[in-house]
Figure 1 (cartoon, rainbow, N blue to C red):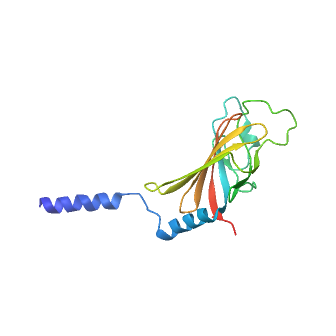
Figure 2: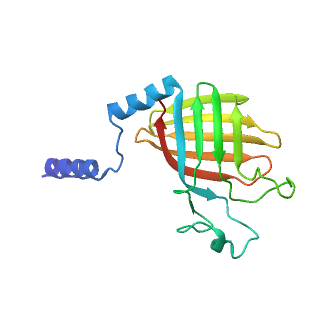
Length: 176
C-alpha cells in the first residue's frame, strides 16, 4: 500500500510541474541567431516605473494602456543587432531626472553605433540568453539588458542616468 501511495505522489508531483523546457529546435534557432549576430527586438508593451507626480496621464496614452502598461502594438519601435552595432528607436514613457530642454525631438531612446561594452550570458536552468549593453549617447548613459527566450519572446530592461527605468516586452526574430 505504501508503494502505491509513494508512486501516486511522485506521479502527482510530476504532472503538476509547470515548467516547460524549450525544444531542441527552439534552442538551436536562438543559438544560431546569436551566432549570426543579426536579429531584431520589437516591443509590444512598455512598462515604466510608476509615474510619481502625474494625474490624468491615462487620457494621453494609446488605447488599451494605463500608467503601468503601455500598449505599443501600432507604435513603430525596434532594437536591431547587427554584429557589434546597435540600432535603437524606442518610445520613452517616464520621468526625466535632468532637463533636456524644450522642443527637444529626442524624447525617445535613440542610438546608432557600437556600445561601449557588451556581455552575454546563457542561463541553462531558466533557458534564457541575457545580453547586456552599456550605451553612451550625447546626453546620457544607458544600461540595457535584453533577455531572449527560445520561444521568441523577449524582455528589455533600460536603466538610464537621466531618466526613470522602463521595461519593454515583445518578440525577437532573426534578420536576413
